[in-house]
Amino acid sequence: HAPPGTVDGGEGVTLNWRDAITENPAVGATEVWEMYNFTEDAHPIHIHEVQFEVIGRETLEEENEPAQPLQPWEIGARKDTVIAYPEEITRVKATYDRPGLFVWHCHIVEHEDHEMMRPYRIGP
Image 1 (tube, rainbow, N blue to C red):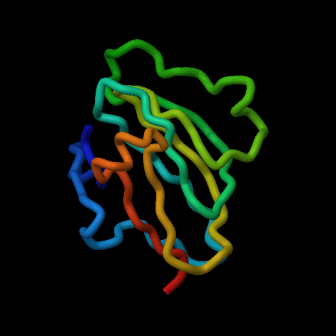
Image 2 (cartoon, one colour; image 1 turned 90 degrees about the vertical axis):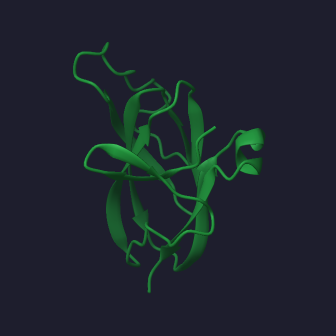
């Protein structure tokens, strides 16, 4: 299980819970977040305090098989959890309208126990 992190030049950069916050939308901002899954497992990613729209997926490598299509239950519905499939980029769009310190994480309890979660802040 790899902790979440950021992407720098197409390469994953692992971050732990205590590392500096890297996601900091302004209050009222609408952002598209890209979740890169470099692992061989699917992960149900949950973002606290927002409802988002799943807007698409693509593979990490152009020569790979096509990405998982949006499922019928993902289209047009606001969600708080999305499946990030292996070797894919999952995109979600949300408006961050509630200031504060929150968390986004994999919803598999064993992964939560192994720091597969990150804090994020809405606002200053």
